[in-house]
Image 1 (spheres, rainbow, N blue to C red):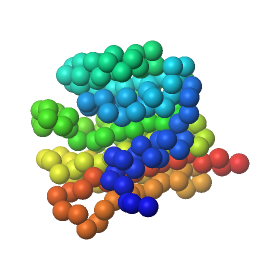
Image 2 (cartoon, rainbow, N blue to C red):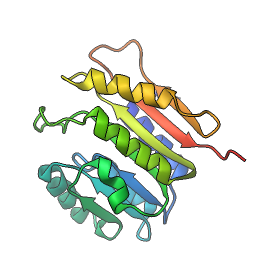
Image 3 (cartoon, rainbow, N blue to C red):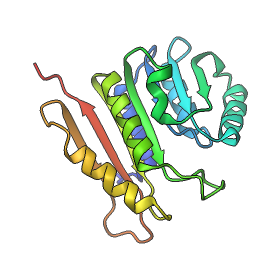
Length: 189
């Protein structure tokens, strides 16, 4: 076994819990990598709700989805992920958030602790038992360290009877390697 980078490991975790026909959320679509991956996992009858505040991200992801014939199962929403509950009413099997800024985009447009925490809370309230919320913390930019600390503080405070929380990081890498957080909803009966 080779230790996987955070982004690759996020897909390994998602593959283990997401099945055809599931409903999932990509809270930060960026360039559409996770959106496409999730769309393939849920199949034609499943649903991916993808959120981004940047029109550029929506456009690039829509092009990618169209090119790969995945439009049936994907709904892209040009709104902040803190508003997930305004669009998603059904229970979800998974959600993923890549925090920071759009790679190759405006580095001044970043995810913020207040909206991110609201988005995580909304996702947890919609999450099926056994479902998973993944957060990848990119924090090597102005404002990133504050968001990282607030997210870590929040997830560490989750009730262990309700949620299992995993922190996955490479501790000998330089330049702020991404940290993966996985929160799984437990069956507390």
